[in-house]
Image (cartoon, rainbow, N blue to C red; front, top):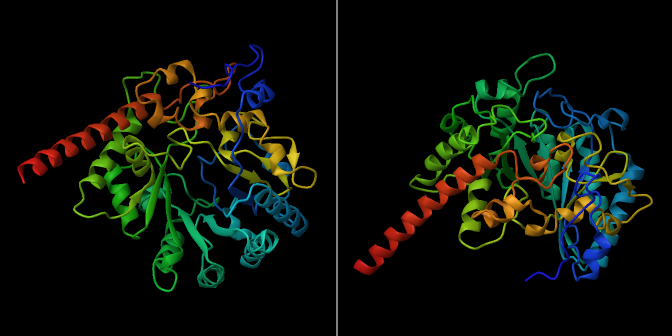
Length: 413
């Protein structure tokens, strides 16, 4: 039984703003340190994706921030990361170069960021590095630099050209797909193949699910990450109806799962499916979208402000903020921020509905950003609750059927 006091907040303040962090610590709770540091190397983008949480949703603070992270801000950030790693005895951490579109910062600046952080941290901890890019600017020169420094590359793509063109175009309206496909073909060949971290695809239920999956497979990605479009109870995501009996996103994902799961050989990893399977078999999650594992990610903006996961900007202006910055504050200070604490509390931070749910430990309440409702805050089920319930139930049924079959075959052998 938990020794934590009831996780409560003020009735007049959206949860978790009034979370009693001192009370939690007094009852034996302590945070886990940050292990993943997301650096916003460039705050602008050369694409005009119409679903982008950064530029098209509630929080427009990007407009007042510098486009580029300065060398001085990077030095402060590297010092703070090293300070945090040494204070907590971390032997390994992950640096993610992000944006906007990080390649707009220039390959040399991205290389300098990785080198600066590794130099500051020193030999006591390994610093894995990756860049998340839309792929349109990715070329051989950039990949040569990334190969020299061991920087892995994740690319965003929504399927074939027609699927990608629904949302991921240049501001002029020109398709981005040919440029990204060219970059992916380059990334998929020696000597760069080992740098390929995978593809990130935002779901549009208007796109054929199996067709989308197979279009992504054409680039032989080591992993695919299907993302639910950001939205919440106050600003619902597209095509997510109020009727809980209708589950368009589950329908879409189940079609992909059945195609992926029934393949005669493993064609790629699909992170959402792998995580659900892992959780159903008693493991722990490594992502925030499912499961109850505490979040250990922190973001540094181009101006040095310390932020939570920036998908929270889809909820309301300032939702991802902490009022902290790398010049004046350590990352340990951020560990006491109520919103970061809430994302490390596991089941204790869930709504009563979620805590009573039969699939609580697998779903984990869904992505934190998707739980928001104006007036009550983030202590709600995910707006995708019906979809996740159906998807997880479907996966569980497939696994149970296979386990029963294997058990019968073992007995009969």
